[in-house]
Image 1 (cartoon, helix red, strand yellow):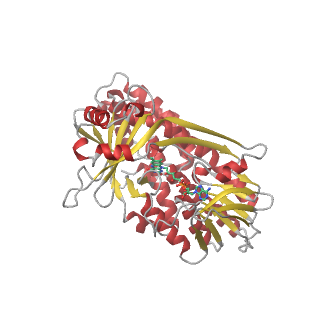
Image 2 (cartoon, rainbow, N blue to C red):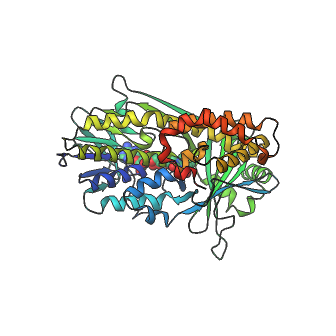
Image 3 (tube, rainbow, N blue to C red):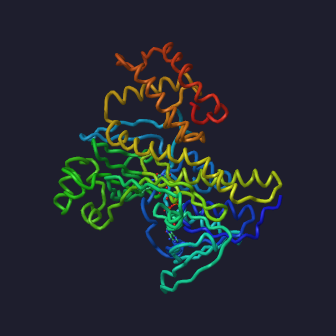
Length: 472
Ligand SMILES: Cc1cc2nc3c(=O)[nH]c(=O)nc-3n(C[C@H](O)[C@H](O)[C@H](O)COP(=O)(O)OP(=O)(O)OC[C@H]3O[C@@H](n4cnc5c(N)ncnc54)[C@H](O)[C@@H]3O)c2cc1C
């Protein structure tokens, strides 16, 4: 096969997805120029941007494993084996995510991960990152990108054969594509903001809250969560409406902030470091769902990661989904290499967009839905009964009954299938839970009938890929 490795390729954005993609492409022998508007975070202390830490799960780990760097990355992550619910009275309830210790999600520092990926990308000299370089636009006919040096303010242009936009949810490359006919995009801003706070470790370095859990304080239409950091601290995130009776617009001074936290998150207050100061100095973040199509301009330009599909963070899948884009991109490249033909960039870009679009739309919708589950339903008796019955079904029908959460988080099967399965799961659980109070007394015969009739047709095509999602 004659893949044209001499092509000049520009990657715009050296965030999580851009840096990972650069490693994949460098390993296949392509030469990559990466443009990043921020300074080099390995040399200068800068904020890693939104969310100090994030949860990496099977889809993200698989991408790292394909490159052989999963163990290195996970050695700096904290496994979270379930949700630790904090009631308004401070009672704790642990809800495991999976059926065993393998089914966990892993909290990792965004900066640690990004730095490691950048270093791997640059390692063999195939990829080079130019920092403080903001891309202001592109011309897909000529292959030019327009670059502004952040420090000097000087502008210039460079020509490339391929331009790949991994420049996040406010992508400059996507904005350029949207000037073309037949390109469309919707950006739905959530009416909620988020604010990050911190719980420091104890003096001896130990964790102040249970280490191996994602902590949640669900309070109806808002919530606080906390994810552990490797060195003993927790990053807390408050998700709250921007406007309304209980909202960011009400929290205008220290007294209001303290009263709000004391009322709703009393058990967290003693642990949060400099609550009022941090609350006023940290920015309030926005969350947006971005759906766009097409993702490419012929074989000239392509979007990946948040640039192609920004999703809200409530399934912990934004990065995982972007990493899965990279896995599939690499699989398609490999197929083309094996076919021993000239690399057809347009075919590659077209196929990637077509394969991913319905799946990235599906995870975007599930992420919005999961917000309601996290902030509200996790404290609801009927929801807890259905979750308990779900655990029974997973135990008695391994590989035959699978929860949406397990499919999204612990498998690689397409997100769209997980979405469809989740809808059928809900129907089955609703039928089984009617009139039931003890989950152990669920009618297993009826359950089996419903599973065979309704779920089997959706899951059978993926039998070989369900082992981790089903394992217990
Ligand atoms: C609060 C919060 C919590 C989250 N938690 C999770 C989680 O637990 N698990 C998970 O999987 N996902 C999570 N996400 C989603 C995750 O952060 C994103 O999906 C992920 O960062 C996307 O990576 P990316 O590389 O596509 O974009 P980004 O991380 O946004 O990176 C884009 C890069 O491009 C650079 N850039 C932007 N514009 C330009 C330009 N014009 N020129 C040059 N460079 C440019 C930026 O500086 C940045 O480095 C969370 C998101 C938020 C907001």
